[in-house]
Amino acid sequence: MASSVMPMPSQGSGPQPSVAISATGLRKSYGDKTVLDGIDLHIPAGSVFALLGPNGAGKTTAVKILSTLITPDGGQARIAGHDLTIHPQAVRAAIGVTGQFSAVDGLITGEENMLLMADLHHLPKHEGRRVTTELLERFDLTAAAKKPASTYSGGMKRRLDIAMTLVGTPRIIFLDEPTTGLDPRSRHTMWQIIRDLVSDGVTVFLTTQYLEEADQLADRIAVLHNGHLAAEGTPEELKRIVPGGHVRLRFTDPTTYRTAATALRDATLPHPQLPSSGGTPIDDALTLHIPSNGTQRELRSLLDWLDAAGVEADELTLHTPDLDDVFFALTGGSDVPGQTQETVR
Image 1 (cartoon, rainbow, N blue to C red):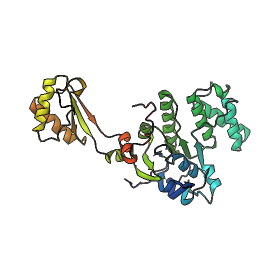
Image 2: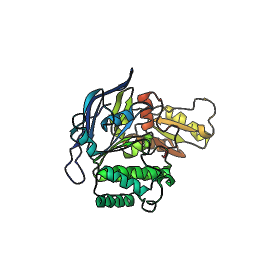
Image 3: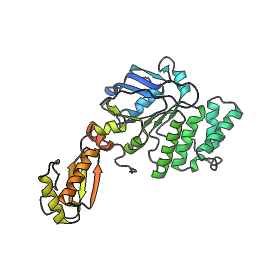
């Protein structure tokens, strides 16, 4: 599914193009392996765009191309209004990049890391110290500022990494798997940092291993598979392209369960999915799955039928397709991001 994108109004101070990142026909190959096979992107300013895909799908390659770290084999792109190949220096001045691996130097303090970054941006000494102080406070690193970065936790190092990225006040930030390896609390802290950045008008291009992370943060999501964008849209738009929604009725009494199952077979409702064993239902098998699109009208019809039939389920839950289902459907289920990682639901 490829959905049209309407430009979002810019946020924050200063002029900003309505489209932060646009790309047409980006291609990249390594030897005989095509990693990107003509992808198109259109990312509004002041939004979060998430790029998903199996391991090795080309997410990091896309980030490296758009951040001028490598050159594409074909296609065109404009970042913050600047042509990627004609004006790479202007692109670099407008962006910040936080890669998969931390750029923090563990041998020096957090403050020294920040000041080093300020020097690399050619900030005057007094300005570099002001920005360093403000960012360390913003990212709750003031107390640890004088300690070697090697003593920081994973979450602290990631916060310092992003703080260093912000020294140059970029309007577009590429975050390549920024929460991989973080515990759930640190991950949620990072999510709030990203939301705060966007509220300030920053555009965030995010790659992630965590499908729920994209669901929580992204205004739009694209799924990269076999060098192509298999689908692109809002999280809700993507979920709607996958069937499988259902209402789950759970019973604790086998007799009530059998009564409900028999009555449902004669009802003008979608057929229930019964346990495959075919035997007497017991324990967790005492459930009926009724296909449903989750609309208010359909749920009301089901509830009215249950009341009229005198059936009272012990538990009723609505299940709708999530991004895991979308990913399986679009990529054949290969290397689901976050599958072997702890996810927060």
